[in-house]
Image (cartoon, rainbow, N blue to C red):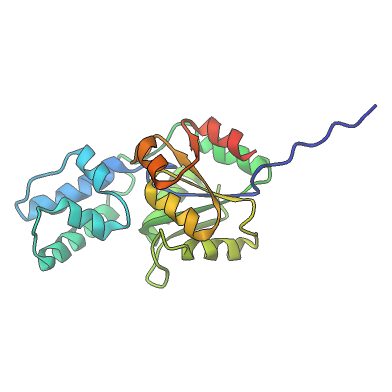
Length: 223
């Protein structure tokens, strides 16, 4: 009897973005933005306005949320107030997207290496990930002063070095054009998820070719 061949994984390593990919953080980000804005007498932003402003780090989120022409010193103050509030409200409304806990477990069971690369500040990235997903990832990295933010490839290169794995066979899973560009800059594959902070059309325009509408579709694309 001929032995059945073992199915080969398509990817040996998956690096996930956090916000908009693994975790729905929009409510808490919006709450922190509005807490900062109202302290200066500015109008609050809607969830959709915050969604559109997310990308390339917290400073950009604040600058996009503040009224046009806001002085740089005021933006600095808004940023400090945002950070102070957000650190105390990281997991108030933030939840894992449907199926993501189970997906990470399935990938681990299949021998896939898992990491996280986020533009959120490092301590917040770790608190949210470990709070929602426990020890499901081997490496969890957020923004630090010594590492440029995505779409620079540095965070990806550091993760791959830490894991001791090659770029070939590695895929970045993310929800934004920043993630697509990061993967391109790092020379790795990318899967765009359609439930996050950007639309399929925006991801397609950025150059994404593989898409997932559900956690199960990520599993099928990886394994």
